[in-house]
Amino acid sequence: MKASPRLFVEAPRHVHNVGFANTVGLLSEQVWWTKTFLGLRCNLERLRPVRKAGVPITMEPTSTSLFRGFDQELTRSRGTSYIELLLRKDLCDSGVQELYVAYSDAKPAYAQWLVRAETQDLLHRHAPGRFNHLEPDEVLLEGAFTFAAFRRMGAMADGMAQLLRIAAGEGATSALTYVAIDNVPSLRGCANVGFDLDHVRVSVRRLGRRRSFTHDPDADASLAWGNATAH
Image 1 (cartoon, rainbow, N blue to C red):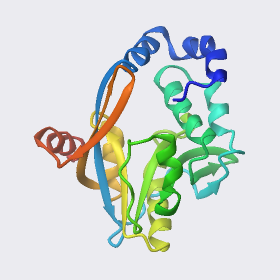
Image 2 (image 1 turned 180 degrees about the vertical axis):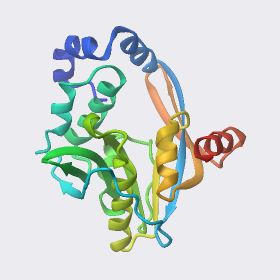
Image 3 (image 1 turned 90 degrees about the vertical axis):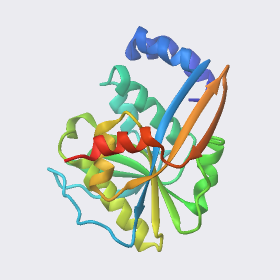
């Protein structure tokens, strides 16, 4: 996240909600950090049947400047969920396009960004060097978040499947997304809508400087993907 003046003013509240141990971990990551993400790809020309969520949802484009769902959820969240919400609020504040949100009974149930090639510069300015540049026929799904009241209802699978169909309808042929190598539920959810292991992205931070690089799947990535997606 960017260190804005507002963030420093609100730091005591954030520390309270994140928790002391998590805060220490976040601060240490600013100095020395290595994290591995699996780069997943979905062929949009061979999409799987949609798995409907337990409640009816429809992904709709939403203005990042007007959406207040993350702010409202922050008031009810603590710990790692609070951190994830701060990161998504930062995406909103940076104007990264395009945010889609699904509602149920007028409440946000699931949110995710569908980044197209023509708007990817907004994401690259927000996170320099973190993502590979998209080809004209590629899209990126980023920032998935299921709101607490709608978890364990299949909202992620349904929401992602809808975004894939939106992208396919616009002429895209391939979708990418990134998931931490140890995030088994999200890896399984991506596999369920048709994503497969494509490459590995390693993000490294050393003394505040961050860089990312990609490579072909290695034994560790293949094992993690296989274990997460085994039925």
